[in-house]
Length: 100
Image 1 (cartoon, rainbow, N blue to C red):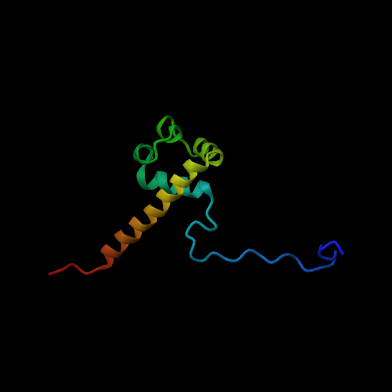
Image 2: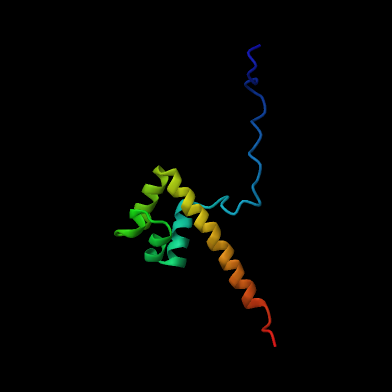
């Protein structure tokens, strides 16, 4: 016995779903596009000071850099989560009746 599964054996268990992970299922392109739409490239370049956001910014150049640079990707993902919290906060404030 080598400890390997038989050739006709069952497939490995699927990865567990991540229902509480707001980044699950999102592409990096969707994250960058959302951030650029929400903040604008200029403000995004101030919040995450990397050249691909500051000099001739585009989604394509940003993706190329972020895929190769883990620390920058972490900052962008963190900013995206912050943006989601801000959007939820704004929605909650709009739904509350005004105080008298």
